[in-house]
Image (cartoon, rainbow, N blue to C red; front, side, top):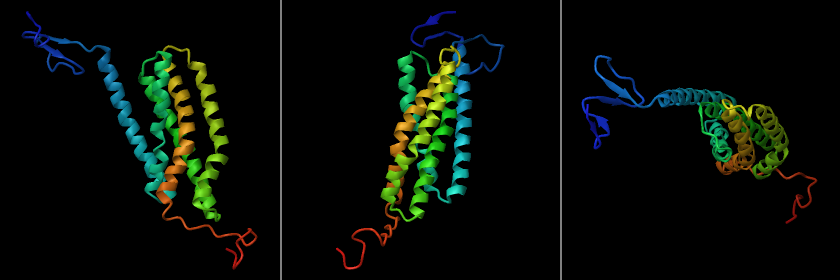
Length: 217
């Protein structure tokens, strides 16, 4: 057998990457090793995550009776990557399959935080508050339960932070929750306001409010 530097292969011998040889009757070389397993794991996790996102969307469409509101809620999921990827770099850790599992697990908490914000906004608007005021009020009032949830995740995940196998899971949960907490608190209310500002009705002025009486300008 002769090595061909131009094609980076052995003449007469097929080289396989990330796929198995079709037959064992011909000589072949498989270079990928564990990389093949990594590709399969990320492929399967990605497929499962996509299916879960579809199910979450369907459930929220039934709850909010809207196709736009679930999209606003779920748009906060990628925000966790803003913290996950830099955290892996700072810790000198690779983005492994456990990191992907941590990202998927944290997505549920991110969606829950966004639902809290959106549901609070809709409650305030139903009570007569203007949409602009409801959006600001939601970010201020609902921040405490969101913060407590993020702190609980950080404390719980810190236990496995030093584990060589589950370190990626801990980093993804901790950094992802912190980043999504800070970003989604502002982004979700703002996106909701931008989406429904034209449809919002002006709040009815209270009779006891100053300047709300008839003939007052």
